[in-house]
Image 1 (cartoon, one colour):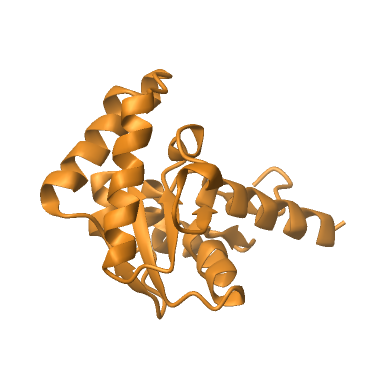
Image 2 (cartoon, one colour; image 1 turned 90 degrees about the vertical axis):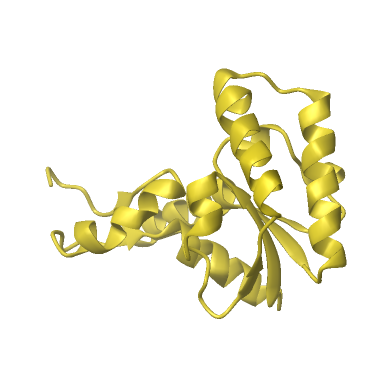
Length: 154
């Protein structure tokens, strides 16, 4: 591992490979979903909205004792389209922000206490000011956890 002290996979979707990777290494892997679940637990959040790529929303990445609410199927497709056709290309559009805010509001009505921004690009579009729910940005949470671990190992 060339002296690496930990592994950080800086994307939500690719955490599907964590079991395979961890079986092949003997250093810590900072799991984005575990760091996010820990942050949610610290704030006593039990029911959460999840926005991300289609794959992230449909898999059980953030299932650790949480009730995870995702948008309706057509909204999943639109969120996924906005991510890949706009955000990944650097197109930060107000209509996309409004769409995400509408979806967040609908999930709040269904009982969500917070929203997970479960795609590294969503934080470019949505901030706390744009959301009716507390925002848990996996990118920020993951980076902080990795930095804490790195500083603790020195």
